[in-house]
Length: 401
Length: 192
Image (cartoon, rainbow over all chains, first blue to last red; front, top):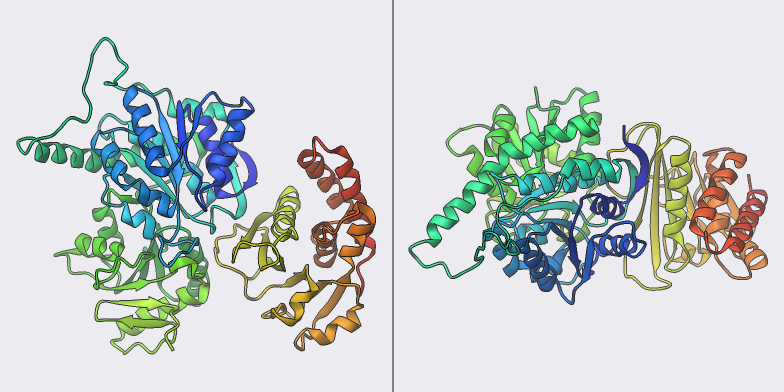
C-alpha cells in the first residue's frame, strides 16, 4: 500500500527520480519542466540520493551528457519541454540508434512560435519519429507511474530503446492532486540495478559505439532498431503487470472507458482523457452511448488494440493537440487511419484542439460528441464550437470571426 | 460539477494567490478529501492579474479544465473589481469574498449585479499589523475556509500549524506570526 499524498506532476516526477537508482541526471531548466531538476537538485544537495546531477548549459548538452553516461555504463535520465526538446532533436536520434535505454520526463508545451509557454503536444509530436518510446499520462499519478515503468521498459533486453514519459505542461505538471507514492526502496527494488551487456567502461570486453555506418549496413541497423520498438509493445504490458503487483494500479497500451457498447468514441492523449471521462459519465446518465480510448503508448503505436477498440463504433473523433501542418490533420489522426486501413469501420473525424494552452472545457468535449451524432445521422455540422479546416479535419473552440 | 466544491481565486502576481490555493488543497487533503489546486499562468510578472483554482470532493476528480461556474470566489486584490469579471459564472447560492477595508454593503454594488452573499475581510490590514508587511494570502485562506465551511476552525488551525512548522522549519518566528494572522482572520470576516 502506497503513501497517500498530494503533489504536482513535477514534484511527483522528482520524487520518482530519487528512487530510480539513477547514476546521472543532466538537465537544463525550461518551463514547465524546470521544477523537476530544481526539486531533484535539492535532494542531491541534501544527500538524499547519490545520483550525479549535471547542470549543463543547454538541452543539446543535457542529452549528450545522458548519452555519454549511459554509453559508459551508467543509468541516466533528464527532463525537458518545448524548445528544450527541440534543441535535443539531433541527439535524440543518436541516443535511440545507439540503443541506449535512457529515460526522459517530457512536460509537453507548445513549440515557439509564436512564443507560448502553455500546453500542447507540438514538442513531443516533433520527437515522435526519433526512435524514442513515448508514453502519455492523464494525471500526476500516471506521470509518476509511467516514468518509473519507463526504466524497466527501456532496459528490457528485447527493447533497449529510450523512453519519454510525457505529461501535459501546467495542466498536470503544476496542479496539485491526490497521488499514491511508492517508497524509494520500493521503486529501487522495482527498477533494480542497471546491468548493461555492453558498455564503454568495461575493460574486459571493449566495444566501439557510434562509428560511421556505411550504405552496406545502415538499413539493417535501422531494421534492428525498429524491431526493438516493436518488441516494446508486449514489454510495456509485461512491465505494467509487474507494476500492478507492486502498486495495485493497472495500465495497458491503451485505456478503454465505456467503449463496450459505444456508438461514438473519442480517441485522446493526456489530461483531456479525464475531462472526457467526466463528460461521458454525464452523457451516459442521459442514456447516450459514448466512450473513450486513451492512448498510453503512442510510440510504439498499438494499432491492433486501437482498431479492436473502435471498429464497432459508428463515429470516432480523433483529438490532435499538435497541428502538424500537413494540411490533412494531426499526427494521431494519421496513425489511427493506418490502424484502420482496410478494416472498414467507423467514420473518422479529426479535431485540432487545445493548442498553446487553449483550455479544453467539458462543453467542448460535449460538442464533439454532438458533432459525431450529427455525422452518424448524415447531417451537416451546425456546431458553433467546431470549425472545419479544409476537407479533412476540424478545429475545436477556434475563434475565427 | 455535482458533488465537487469549486473555488476560484483572483489576485495579482506576487500576492501569493497560487500558494493560497495550494495550501487550501493541503488542508482539504488532510481531512481525507480529493483535491485539485492549480494556477492559471498568464504573463509572468509582478502585479499582473492571476487566477488560481480549487476543486474539493469526496469522489475522484477527473476533470482537467479551469473553473467557469465556481461555488465561491476569493478576490485577493480589490483593484481587480473594476477590470476583471470576478463574479462571472459564480453560483448565487455561493458567495464572493473580497479583501478590502470596505463593508460588504459598499462592495456589493461593484460586483456586476451579483445577487449571492458578499463577504469582506481587510486582509492587508491584518497582515500589516501582525507581520509588518502586506501578505494578504494567509488572511484570505482563513477567510475562505470560514466562507466555505470546508472544515472546523480548530481542525484547520491544527493542520496549518503542522504545515507552517514544516514550511518555516528554519524561521520559527514566521510560524507564530502566521498562526496569529489566521486566528485573527477567522474572527474578522464581515457579512456572514
